[in-house]
Amino acid sequence: ETLLLINGPNLNMLGIREPEKYGKTTLQAIVERLTQQASQEGYKLLAFQSNSEGDIVSFIHHNGLSARGALVNAGAYTHTSIALRDALLAVNLPFIEIHLSNIYAREAFRHHSFLADKALGVITGFGDYSYDLGLLALIHFLREKSH
Ligand code: DQA
Image 1: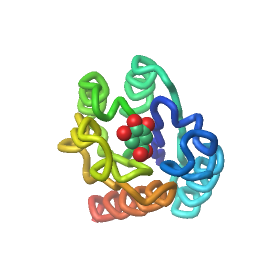
Image 2 (image 1 turned 180 degrees about the horizontal axis):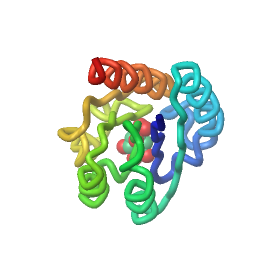
Image 3 (image 1 turned 180 degrees about the vertical axis):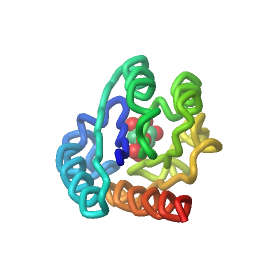
Image 4 (image 1 turned 90 degrees about the vertical axis):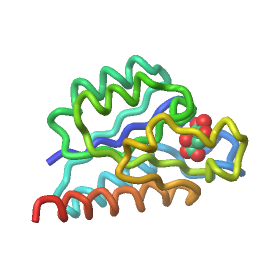
């Protein structure tokens, strides 16, 4: 049983990038932590990061059909990408939208998401703990569904 952890543009820079907004934890540390947590719950985590919209779309096409669900921090593509939205819908993948920062406490252009209304839910503003909360919520959702 596989879960996807998808990170979009600039998230490879976590730890270096605007630490006052995004914290000091690296993406690698987040991926390692979530991989471990997922495996404790009996899931395999497949993590992917790309700065290219098309590569993320292709990753979703190739891995979305066989996965049970996904955590998606699409970075700035959250606010711009109809293609990402359509890719997630194309493979019918339940997903949770994740943000480290509280997008509603920031610029108005970050308040709109092309993913949120199709997500199971949105977790925004808890720093790298947003990912942990997302994983808990996704696993809870999958358990409820299978009962
Ligand atoms: C982000 C919020 C986005 O608005 C921004 O473009 C990012 C990171 C977050 O995790 O807080 O790249 O998705």
